[in-house]
Length: 389
Image (tube, rainbow, N blue to C red; front, side):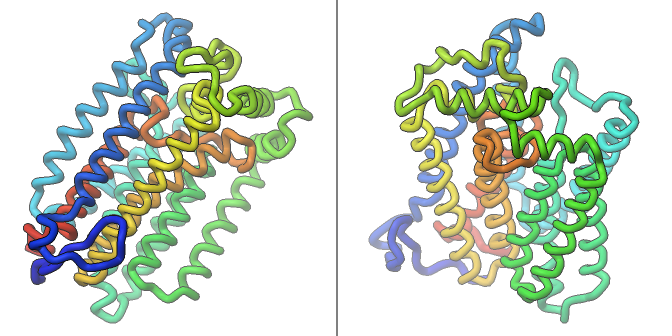
């Protein structure tokens, strides 16, 4: 694959010669946005979690320290992935995907039989769904470009279909149908990037969504939870109380908020406010203005990811195209779903807000995704590295 002879401006559609601009601004702009989101995230996570940590008998900085440790681990691991040879990166899914599925099966079994969820020492939150989505994106990006050039082998379609069916079943079994919905949406994005037939993608997505809904409705607990989210102020169970408190916290934030650290609902009045409902605390303390700033950062994040995918598509690099769109939309769609769930617009289960929720494994996966996105923007933007080894 030839290197790029031209580069592209981040905010226009015109071509720019290498003499006019020595390297694309995309990697640097993306790095600044990622750092801003990470710093905002640590501040908001500490503000939302310090009271929870104290009530659990831990130091007030417990969750902040935990997120910082996983941020450092993510950066170190990301640096390794950044310099990993291209061919090894494309084969990485052969290790990651089976491992992620084993962890998901373990969590589903322990959750179904009430054996207790696997967790790291001192941390009760261990969701493997983000890990599965991360591995699935790499799997599709590695397999489907070759399949596309070799008359679309049926066995590959069947294997991906069966694995996705099992994944949706296990996520729903764990009660994480928000993550199951996110997983299906990410699959749609990746399949579209791989240029599969639209009719096949539509049928595939419809089948998976129908399967997920049937499983959710078959569970009395999940059905009760969905009804409680549809009418939060008409019920007194835990789900309704949490959602009504979340909506009230968002409403009390107003335009400018109460100030960082001055929130009321984080003081034991809203469960999971440092994880699934952290958006409510952010809205209460930062107000509409602060929330719009966060949303703007996510929009810029999405824009740069799409720009990188377009460049990769022009260069015929489908691995980078699919991976970039998959990681970008996984983060942005998850953020949108988290905000909408906390606002009572979506009646699915709670879902963490990327960069902000005090969920260490998901934070670690987000850092890895950002590191790979940064690498892909270097490859497609600056052109100093060949697209393929």
